Length: 213
Image (cartoon, rainbow, N blue to C red; front, side):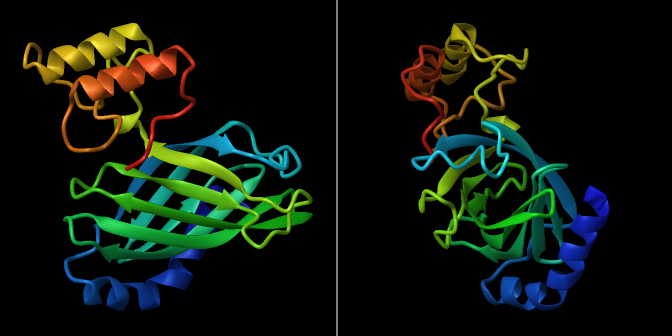
């Protein structure tokens, strides 16, 4: 099935009840929009990611419509989840989405995404968990971290993360340069030496992904 058609089906099924739930939490849900994000494997204790054909990194499309949100990857495996957008107490929105991963139509694995969309309406992060019902052979979940590109750490946007990005984060945090919009890798609202240190740790292989709040 075409990705766009599948996403449309998810949102049509969700939209009827989503607006009421989002409004009950206070604040308007995000307008119709799409956000691209990246999933990065962070935990696979049972060694089952390969079984469901999940690579170490995978692109993900989030689509918001009328208080409902769907997320879809593909073409194979096709991972699709959907749910509602709930206003939180910090000006952003909480997302709790449920669905499944489908490997060529022959294996379905339960999937849950738990994340947050910041008040700017562009920055999204969270955790994607597969095999949440213990249905994988190893009996343990496969876990991915999800982030939009603006918190990816590629500060100079040259397609890779290196020590130059850490230096730019330091300079921006000290007020020496302007125009940096993706150096807050720990998502605390400020760019500081902590962000630069995390970028260096990632470059050196000390960490595999930036920590989530």
